[in-house]
Image (cartoon, rainbow, N blue to C red; front, top):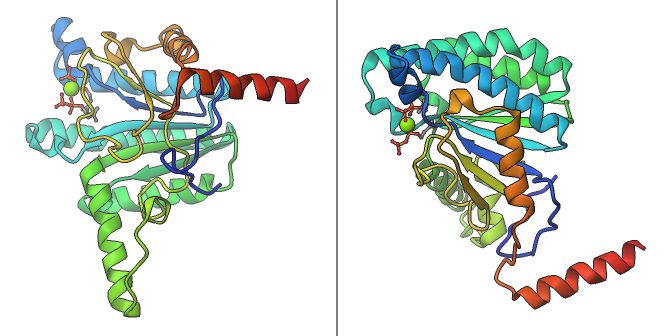
Length: 260
Ligand code: IPE
Ligand code: IPE
Ligand code: MG
């Protein structure tokens, strides 16, 4: 599909979000409350990833994007960072066959140049193996930052201009073609677990008109019922994209008449 921008065209809206983006937060506190080392929360978090991806696929969600490691998470203690890298590798190695068998396409976005060769090769293999799957696209944001993404798109445009000698076109949609997730529609629903209410440098550009849902549930406890609560909350929102309520109402009546 080609990327369409919510600030250029009003997107089609359905009761079930097409794209769900999640900040999986609260692993450390989940573990600490159980007197376990923080990393035990990360290990349990992988189970919640598996369950959430399966539940989303069953509910007809087409894109799931998970924030696994931010460009600022390098600031954590070295041991926690290395544990997260090892966990990423082992989870990917273990799960990729199953993801593929279930028709899931895997993509990884973020500055992967910071990862070692082994991780980069593994990502490449997993993306290639699942490239033709169409049931659901699972994107893992690893060493991702919304600011990094906007800057890397800008650098690409500048490089193109210098190469061709013609200033690159800069408008909403042509700019977004260079963002890391140009293959996906903008998220309909953003979920953050763990109680904090902030974006933490996630998809800054793409969240322009996304519906936000915050829950105190720690990520390792996030399950199908918690996902259903988020989707139900989303289903009750009126997405106006700048229009009035009356305009939204009359458009949905028109759509109902057409479908009769
Ligand atoms: C989210 O859980 C996982 C990552 C950022 C990798 P945290 O590790 O941030 O858990 P809390 O917020 O400290 O509880
Ligand atoms: C955001 O969580 C990043 C991920 C979940 C990967 P953080 O725990 O790093 O965010 P802050 O530091 O609380 O904003
Ligand atoms: Mg956190």
